[in-house]
Amino acid sequence: MGKSCIFIDGENFRYSLVKLFLGDFSQEEYLPKKADWEGFFENLVSQCHSPERLRTYWYVIEQVDFYPYRFPEDEPTLIKLLSKHPPYRDELSRIKDGALVQRIKQIVDELKERERDFRRRFEGWIEIQNGIAQKHKGVEFRRAGAIRYNLFDKSLGQEKAVDVKLAVDLLELRNIYEVAIIVSGDQDYVPAVQAIKDSGKRVINVCFLTRDGHYLPGGARRLNQITDEVLEIKYDGLKKFLIP
Image 1 (cartoon, rainbow, N blue to C red):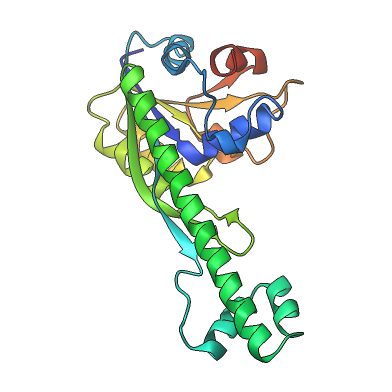
Image 2 (cartoon, rainbow, N blue to C red):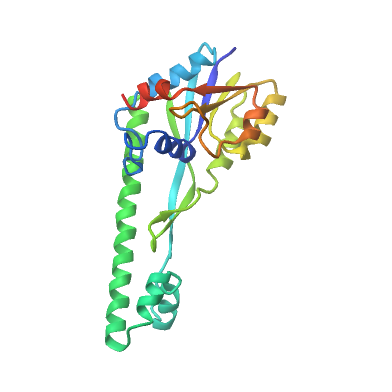
């Protein structure tokens, strides 16, 4: 096989790590702190029988979209907005007048503080990404799209447009590689994979196995079926690089 490039769906990959190493690695850490990323990527390339890894393209979100994105000055409109969160709706329905005004202000201040906290957290993610890119050879983070953060329940939504950027790059960069190694379980890549296969490239999808040797739930069967090969990475084989 010829030279290869690795394409990583960042959030999909991170989700897999959290599920695999529950207890050894927390989602709050973003990524394992002591991981040997370069060693891990070179090992992937070696198992794919490629003589050289040109680069690892690691796709991550570019920005965070917050919900609510603003807080209206008009009190009835603001109450209507806050009431979309059932706990706030129930609480606000039981108080009136000055106490209501005071509690609304307190809630808004709390939500704004949550937004500031998550912005700092997101900036920390970028610092980690930049540190990995500087420390490890041939790793490039590519930023695109956004992810939604719900200030009410502090939950993250689905990333948007990251998969589009990865699919576009698979096609646009196909003249520099012979083997595309994809680290993702997203079946949205099926059309792009078929297109680069039609141009004569070899495509390998990487799947991670749990401690007992099973696929993680939610794996994209269609993507595995359409790629030329599926590279199964055993639990211990992954852990030695990422959770040493």
